[in-house]
Image 1 (cartoon, one colour):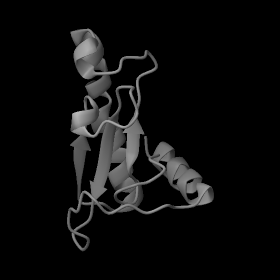
Image 2 (cartoon, helix red, strand yellow):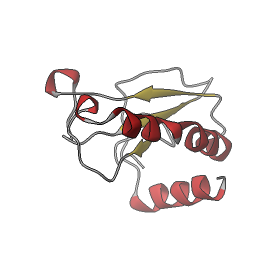
Image 3 (cartoon, one colour):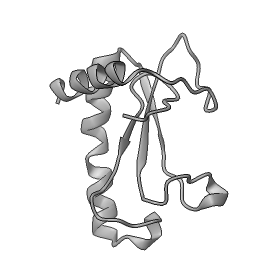
Image 4 (cartoon, helix red, strand yellow):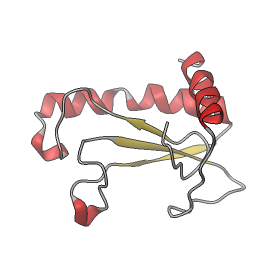
Length: 107
């Protein structure tokens, strides 16, 4: 779960092997990383009631990469909320844990 989500259910998919940028990864590892996105996105949408989702993957400081480790953002989107990239909330740890458990149960 993203600690500062753009929308409810914002999840980070983080590979275990460290690479700062996606261009540092072997092609097969990039494929493996992105192959899990649909399954996770479906579970997020089912858990949250989102109707769509955005993907984000930043590479380098100029691209606003804050954490120097490859990760993919899955950001659920809701009809009534629009798609604003800059809004952030700070949910409690309990809220994040509860949502994470709900998403896991929908795999």
